[in-house]
View 1: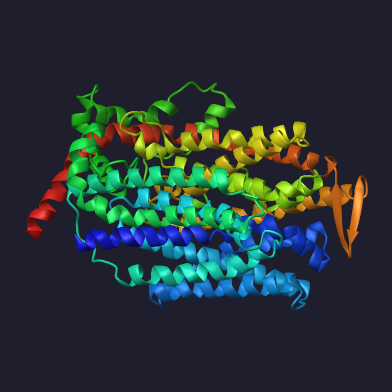
View 2 (view 1 turned 135 degrees about the vertical axis):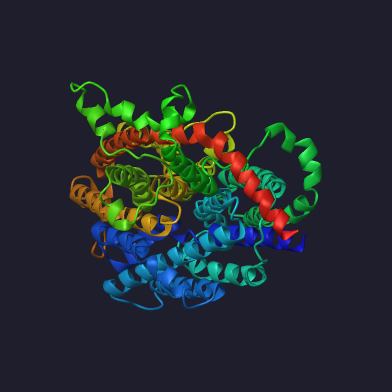
Length: 587
């Protein structure tokens, strides 16, 4: 029981780390003041945002550090990078010191790298302590990363609502404080022992309760996160409420002790099997591949069992290729080099040669990444439309709905027993709001309601994509290669950030001389709807490309997901028998 309690405390510690280390999402809160202090153009400001995103390119360095240093040391290395990167920027924006632009660029790069290091520590903790429910642990904790901007907006209002530079000070200090608070659970990690199916199912229910609490936290931040009250006492009370909701999951160990009560009242209504709420479990993938190899050795028996499910799976890909020669071009693209099964390992050199990967890459860069660039430009968008006073509200909207989108990414795992749908299909659905939002902004961008609605839709869509990416990569290209393959995938973020940001900056600076133009040193502020109108149209068209790419990916992988689900009934009995035999050997 003590070990069970400690693993949940580790999960809560990871939630704290993720909730306060998504510091790149509040860039738009202080970007306008940073631009004015440095006296730079919109293009140069965009390069600073790109520098922060470029930290993901160096994500491999955190894995290298873990090979030579303990986990807690890597955690404090990440906190130190953030302290230096954001702390010195705060000194610059507060006019305490003056630095050339190139040094500020490298400070942004260092700060962005710290975020990636924090994420690596959190992923390792989840995978190590929740091997049977790692997908649920990862989706829950990654979700809290999306709420960071709303938390910092509350904190900024509580301490100094009149200055946007407070965000940089908080970005530098809070992650270090949280790392110190999370140190004790990390140092007292329990040993990982094989779990019985009953414990795995009980853990799944606990994750369900934690997700419900996360929804409550998101609603609270959505309602109160943009509080603009001048009363510091009110703002601090609201911040205290948010911190309480983050501390409350510590009650989970008590839920673990009372799991027998949940088993009789709640658990039985879900009729769980296997590993609970997991859509595609890594152990299922291994047994699924072994089942396929057994089918190969029984090909003569399969020939006499044409109505059998195994035969149907064996010939599923062949049926697609036996269509008439006059098939349409789209159908040929769907059939070419399809995945035979889920979970097949793809080394890096094989990965980059697969059409499915590049469809996935385009869907991500034209979906989630474009939403991230929108959030980076949110301060200038609000300023150009005359809504500077609502920047904090827009930031909170984006952050809260990104949080909800991340939570929704776990929906396929929870509804799998009653409604099965390929995860790539969910990804396509999640991309739908993005083009709708951009075209809405292009048509009615000067409307406050349209600006808020578009921001919420973009946050919801991009949040889902960010959280679902690890699971999709694992299922399509192999769980053992997910570390390398996912790092290859997210190279699209700095590339997309650069391309989309430069596109927006060129249009912004080009329109600065058309409408009302204000000069702050060498910086230029564009005012009017035209500043971002063409940008919204182009971003909307690009997001449509991502939607089409995601749809093609779904059509190409649907048969693999369907085949996996049909064979799950054959896989799970073998998996349960293996679990029982391990437990009997330990006894």
